[in-house]
Length: 104
Image (cartoon, rainbow, N blue to C red; front, side):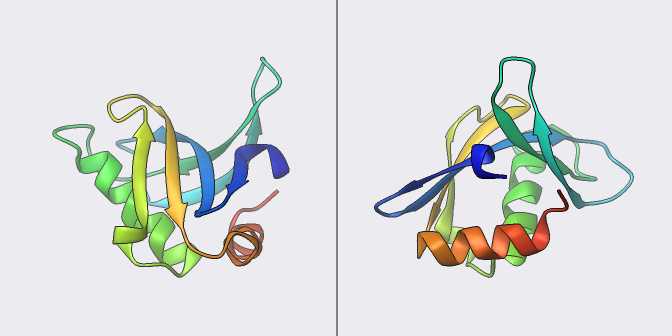
C-alpha cells in the first residue's frame, strides 16, 4: 500500500486510477503498475463529463478518509484516468484511514 501515496508536510499525495461509468462507487484496492509504481483503484458511477467523475472520486475518498471534500484537490491528471490528489490533514491518520478502507 505504501506506493500509492506519498506523505508530505500538509498531508499526503494520493495516486489514483479512476474507472468512470462503473456499476457502483467503490475503492477497489491497490494496483501494481507495469512501471513498478502503484495506484489506488477507484470506480465511480459518474460519467467522465465536465468533471463529474472527478467530483465523485473526491466525494468517495473524502467520506472514506473522514475529511471534508475541500481537503482534497486534484494536483495532476484532471481529465485523465490517472490522477494525483492532494489530501490535506494529518498524514499518518490519513494513511491509517486509507489502510482501513482500501482492500489489499
